[in-house]
Image (cartoon, each protein chain N blue to C red):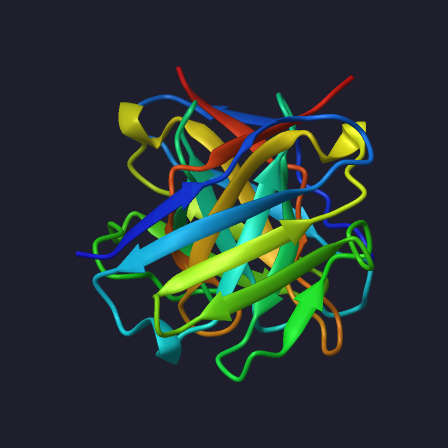
Length: 108
Length: 117
């Protein structure tokens, strides 16, 4: 199973925007990229699925996109509650889910 | 309200077995795929197994041949039978409800499995 690479950390000040990348090893990361946020000691929460769709209840400040083998999560108007670990996932036909290594987002 | 409640975790010796359960409520259990995802202490998330509505399972390479995922739709319960446990299987195990087959929209709070002698 191939790996998804995320930067270990990202940061931004309140009100700013921050983008977290997720890079796969294939030429196309696919259409089934998801993003999860996890607060310490808590279960993950789905923030984005199928590249750019938001589940009910997730603020519009969270958006997803992809280009080639890289997907991105952008958080606009950073708030303190956005701090946490963010994980990307993707699927390939015939393969199981792959998780990225996670990115720790710090709101300065 | 969707609720997922895992149970069955604990301390087990290497080579031992354990069965995890996940009691689901608040949705039509039989209509959704279900997954197990784990997180070793201080580490990232790792997909373990997925079971489709038709009962077909998929496993991560790291657990193939050792773990078995199953479901009992009459009891709204998901299971993970873990055999030949290794130290590296130590983790919090989460069960999760599938949203679209490619994402999980609800997660339990997890159950800790510790494999140690």
